[in-house]
Amino acid sequence: MTDENGNKPPAGYEFWSAEDRFEHTNGPVFVRSDSNQEPGQGVLKLYAQKKHCNGGGAVHGGMLMTFADSAMFAISRHAFEGDHGVTVTMNNEFVAAAWPGEWIEADGELVRKTKSGLMFVRGKLYSGEKIILLFSGVLKRIKV
Image 1 (cartoon, rainbow, N blue to C red):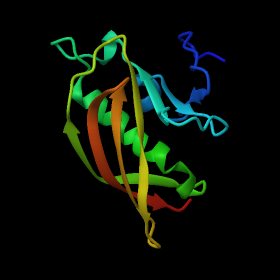
Image 2: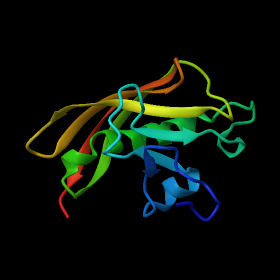
Image 3: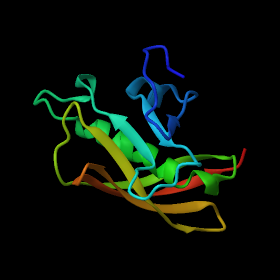
């Protein structure tokens, strides 16, 4: 399966969100299929392209934060139980630059879920062995 630009998910992944126009425009972003649980593989992947870069040629920090925000939802997606959610707060620590031509991956963990629907998430963006960004945040489940 490909999108309208001919992009195809890597093996073990599928398109993250065809319904989210913002992510679709800024991607494509790929989410690990539930059937693929191999350790060391990120839950989300993005192939960095020139369109993702700043004037210095590195992947734009805003793009990395957008990808990290998406990752928080991907990491905790099963906890939403079909409902929607919003980002309440998010923290980012830039560690290294990312460059076009790199696969950027995201992985992390759902640290805590409260009865009121708050979800505390933390994770990292990386390319190979290189850590690019550390992130943490709080999401709020919105019942549909």
